[in-house]
Amino acid sequence: TRPPPVLYVHGELPGGPAVAVVGTRWPTEAGSRYARELAGELAAAGLAVLSGGARGIDAEAHRGALDVGGVTVVVAPCGLHRPYPPEHAPLYREAIERGGAYLSLVAPDARVELPRFHQRNEVLAALAHVVVVVEAPLRSGARHTARIARRLGRWLFAVPGPPWNERALGSLEEL
Image (cartoon, rainbow, N blue to C red; front, side, top):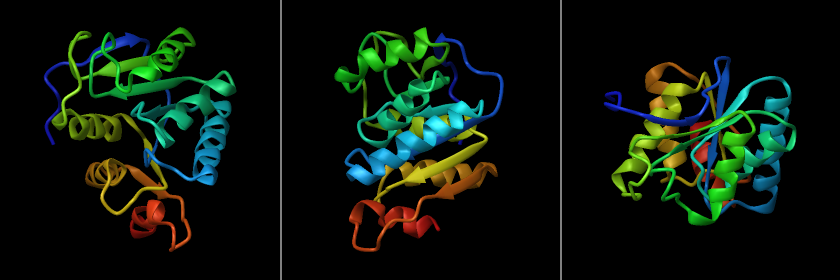
């Protein structure tokens, strides 16, 4: 994994410890609730919460940090002026306004492109001191983030789910 040549930061990156919370875009209700509560507890304890800004677990992690007045950083695969998914633009603005940041691999007007999701996951793992996987299927971006975290020597945690929940099979595999 090579570092990106440039990063674009809107807002302020936190200087203290940071935890990445990642998982599926299609979580169960329990997975969503757990991610939001966990992120809230971590943020309330003074840790920055990082995630990728995607639907599902990522968004719940950002919201959980903001719920308690904590700091969150969106590590995005696209520019701030062309957010993905577009309906999360208010969430991204709130993260910046509340002392966090929107960090992207590309200029503010750049659109999302598929290869950037993997690059985003690599940056996310590199910035975090700890990575927590919540409800990840066997093949997922969250598991890619976990692989990078292991390669970088980061602490890695996975939330166990029932073996009949396909959305959590990757989390069980990580365990």
